[in-house]
Image (spheres, rainbow, N blue to C red):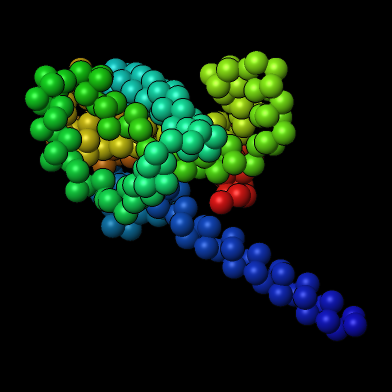
Length: 278
């Protein structure tokens, strides 16, 4: 018995060590970029330089903000990400409510079509989306950048799965008391499923914040660029572009890191809530 427990503990320790090594391997590019952001140009271009900066300096951060208007870029990204995520919660929760509680012709077909959108790569629809946005004269406008982020089939599916776990007795009792569909949705259903809503908001915010190709396509004015597109402007900086690029990358990753750090429990709980009932 003791031998079996010892083997189990040894296996558990080895597995944890393996997970730590895998995590370090995944994080190594980020760690390397962090150190480069504080290196001087002479060490970055040196073949014999080590991983740790020999002389810690913030000149790369100063150069990044001096070369491009990063405060404007970060405002654009935050505005687009925040508003898009709020609207996506509203559209996804309304659609999920219809699929979970309402009966109407073609309900199953429409739900299957929503699921089918999971199979369509986003790059396939870029050209069609661009023609639509250009035809609506929304180039270089916030609404044009946000247009493709306002509805997401995966979010509809996740919220619908969470709604399906809601007690039908409470729903029936609210209807008997004269509660309308909207009042039940707004005052009872949404507060009871706040975890999945937080998860949708966080994942949506991080996804839009890190988007690059679509904001690049629908903006050609510097003042409308998002932060991911703005980083590429540093490639044309004179002298040492690598240090400022890494410095800008570290600044850009801070919001995503903080959101995940403070809301990781809600993300896990929301994902679990969305996969309980089919």
